[in-house]
Image (cartoon, rainbow, N blue to C red; front, top):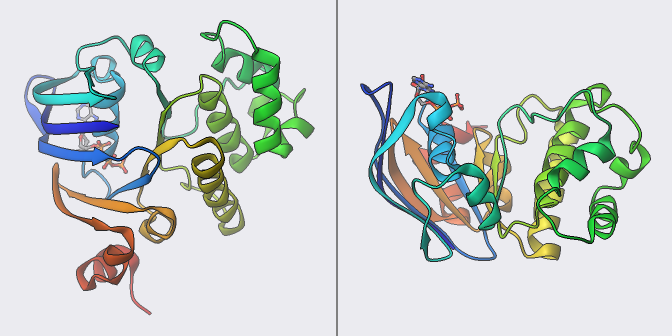
Length: 240
Ligand code: ATP
């Protein structure tokens, strides 16, 4: 569904952050991308979604394909139209707009059926329905994360990129977000690339996982096997 082949990324013409990254996100599955702070995970997502430019970054080598089409060099809006949705790190909702307005903005590329889509999102995330007239900036962190996911889903993406959805959330909320990612994957059939520092959270719901260190993929395997791997347990999961 989404393939990244041998991609290198440089910021400000000098700082090389990705050093030949290859990964495959299989259709219908949840793929986890793990790695410590600064490993280059967000950079990889920016490369895929066409958002490197605004961060003074550039793909200097490699290929990125979505559904068999080379998308490298496309404008972000065109990549969204091609079926890629994403929730950026820090769940940037439009704080001054209501929940429902945020969802409408997410669906602006659709030709029709906007109200039906909003209803579908409300079924997935009932709390958003309860809060539909609230200003998004006043929602809790977990609710904003749900809204950011709901907004991305309004464009009906085939692949959804999630950048650290559990960041800064209380454990109960992390559990809810986890359940929602599974629900989106199973009920809508959305393919997911989940970037997380919370390796346990990600591997517990992913089918496959990749581990990135200093701009390179250093390991990839079935999520279950990664969870059993001694090195992964020591480094990312902690012991005891
Ligand atoms: P985090 O979990 O902290 O987001 P990450 O694995 O997503 O980490 P990136 O955000 O991709 O890592 O950052 C990787 C490296 O690229 C870091 O060393 C960071 O300082 C550098 N970097 C990120 N954005 C830029 C930028 N716009 N200009 C220069 N360097 C950048």
